[in-house]
Image 1 (tube, rainbow, N blue to C red):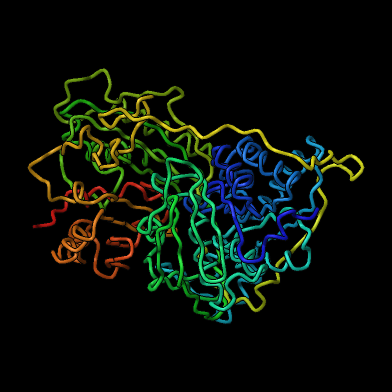
Image 2 (cartoon, rainbow, N blue to C red):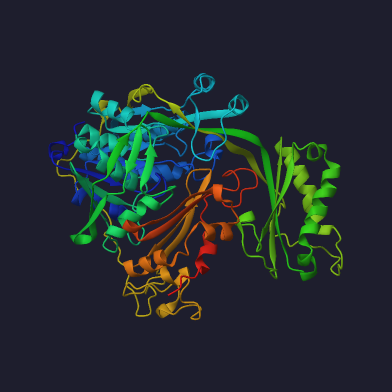
Length: 629
C-alpha cells in the first residue's frame, strides 16, 4: 500500500500521537481530527515504560494493558491505515518491549486485520539480549551502571530471567529504508523518542542539526498530550527542518511556551540534558514561541553525539508475594502499634523456618502514618485510625499464603498492653482475608552496554490479514464518521455545569487550588508553595530515582522563589532526610518557570517493600514550604 500523503512529505512531516501509552485509550474525535483535518502522515506511539516496576518484564503473560484495551486502540488506527494509508509505528510493544510482547501485538493486528478484511505489510523489531552477550561485555569491563545503580555482578546476571535493550532510531530507519511500503512497524523496547526520530530521519527533517528538533519532538510526543493544558491524551506535531509545532486536537486544550518547556522536567533527572543512545539531547538553548490556535513552535534543540551505548533492563524474581489489609481504630492499640506488629511478626517467625533463615520476610505498610513515603516521611503524628497492609514474600506462593494467614491471625487476636477490646483488633474488609499477589521481581539489570552497530537488531517483515484477493475495497471518497468534540460548559462558581471536576481551575481560567471561588484553604499561610505554585508533583525518573517539580505561574513568582534561596539542597536534606550524596539535582529552570529536585530512591522500584511504585505521592512535604516576601 502506498501512503497517499507521501507526496506531501516535502517541507513538513505531520505525526499524530494518540496517548502516552498504547492501550490507555483516546478520544475518537481527537484521533480523526488529526487524521482528517490535519492529514497526519503517521501515527507513532510509545507503548512502554518501566514506571510500573519490573513485573511486566519478569512475568511472561503480563502486559501493561489488557488485550481488550489494545484492540480498542488499534481499531481506528487500522481503519486509517487501510483506507488512507497512514503509517503506524509503535515502540516498546506491550509495555516492557520483550519479544513475546511484540508477538502479542502481531497477533492482535493479525486477528483484527482478518476480521475486517484488511491486509497489512508489518515489520517487527525485537530487542531481547542474551545473558551470554551481556556476560561477554561484563567480563571485558564494558558494562556501566545507568544512574545510581550498583555495579552489575555475574551473580545478578545469572539470576536475571530476561534482558531487553533500549534501541535507538536506527533499526526503525532501517525498516523504513529497506521496506518503504511497510504499513505498520511493531518494535521492541526502545528509547522513547526513537520511532519519532527515525521517521524524521527517513524524510530528512533536521539533518543539519543532527536531528535535534526531531529528537526533542519525540521526547515530548512519547508522553502523548501531557504538554497541553489541561493535560491531554492526544497531540499532533508538525515537524520541519529546523523546528516543530505542537498542535492541540481539542477545542478546550492548548499548548503554551511554558507547558511545552515544562515537559522536559517530567520524569527526568534534569530538564536541560537528556541522555539517550548515542548522545545527549541539549535543551538549554531551546526556544518556545506561541502561535495562534493554542499552538507552540519549538526550535534550537541540539544533539551532541557520544559513544553509542544502549540501556539494558533486566528482571530477577525474588519470590512470591501475599498481602492482607485491615484497619485499626482503637486508640490504645494505635499508641503501641509498632510493638504490636513486631510481636505478631516475631511469633509467626517462630513458626516458619523460612522466616528464621531470611528466605522469607514480613513487611508492614501503616497507612495514615508513613506507608506512602516510608523513611522519607517528615511528619510524625498519631492518627485516630490506621490502615495496615501486611506484605509477605517467600520462595513459593503456598508458603507466602501460609505465613500471611498466620501473621494476619496474630493481628486479629494477639493481646497488647492496656487492651480492653478482647473480641479482636483488626477490621478486615475482604474475604478471603489474604490475597496472593504472584511473583515479585527487582530490576537486577539497569546498565549501559556499547553497541557496535545500532541498526543490527532482528527484523522480520510479514503480511498480516486476508489474502490480496479478499481485501476490502478502498473507497476513494472515504470519510470516517466520528463524534464531534464535547466542550464542557462551566458555571460561574468554577464547577463544571455537568458535574465534572474542574481540575482546580475556575471558568475564567484562574487557579482555585481545588476550592470554589479561589478561596485559600488557610488564608494565614498564603506564602507556601501550595498557593504560590501552579504545579507541585513527583514521579519516577527511572527505577532508581524520584524527581520533583515545582512550577510557577509568572516570572514574578519564579524570581521571588529563586531570590529567596529557600529551595536548596539544605531544604531537601531536611524534608526528605537524605544525605547530600543522594541528591542528584537541585536547580531552577527558567524556560518552564520551575525548580527541580531529584534524589536517589530509598528502595528499588516495584520490588519488596515498595511504598509508591510510580513515585507520584512524594511531593507532599514541599506543599508547605514557605517562600518569604
